[in-house]
Length: 95
Image (cartoon, rainbow, N blue to C red; front, side, top):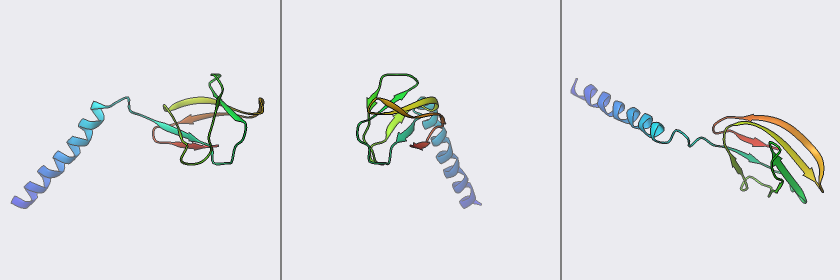
């Protein structure tokens, strides 16, 4: 009986600690975009924003907040891909 009580107390402490951490950092949600292909002269625009150049590969992930995005990909200033995506917390969206 004593062992069960100790196990229950330890489990309660562990689970309450996880919830405490979540409540301390509620805005730390993030998702990632990445471009696996070898890309030259490629620029990206998110939600009609300013164009930016990207680096390809899994090691070059672009952090975004979870939500809906209109992604436009340009090569030599010509639109080649236009996609609407909805990324959730922890998602990694590949193009």
